[in-house]
Image (cartoon, rainbow, N blue to C red; front, side, top):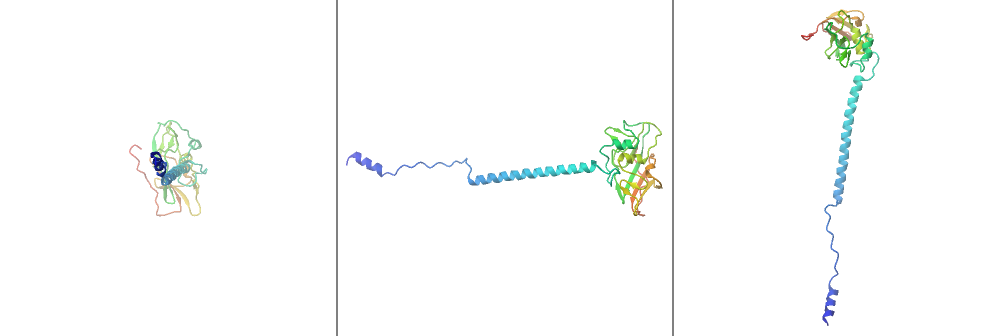
Length: 233
């Protein structure tokens, strides 16, 4: 057999060449990697939703607190606690007062305590104050200290004027929306001495302790007869 024929038979006997197997692409996601990525994306979405819910809840609380403190309320003030009005000007005008720079003709203080069913009601700060200006009858903090700072010496101011600025009704039989009757009373004392008639007519005088007590009479309860003012009050 010729060498050419032998060579031809050898070529036919050899197995045919096959295409090389492709190398795996390590950057391409596998099925497990796809599942993991999807799981992470779902987790991120859940976390974002949770954070948004927390932010919304916090905002809701803030809105609720603001509305509770400054939202519309009955004309008589409603029930305590009694925050200052969102707009102090109508109350100042209703009290027959005006606001402006602090007066210097006189400067003295009295103290007011209010009790409802045995619980002390806060007398808030900034009654009668508009930004940097104020009426001659106002409060600066929540201790119940009433400041009297008029521009004219000898002016007379009443407790009713403070309550009008506060936006809380005060009469011989009512404080806020709380009315005397059905076993409940509204009483007033000045320096521990009972005052009859309309407590709104009580004249605010230096270093007096004024107490208003609403509820069922309790012989064991004693309103304060005095108050310890700061040295400069």
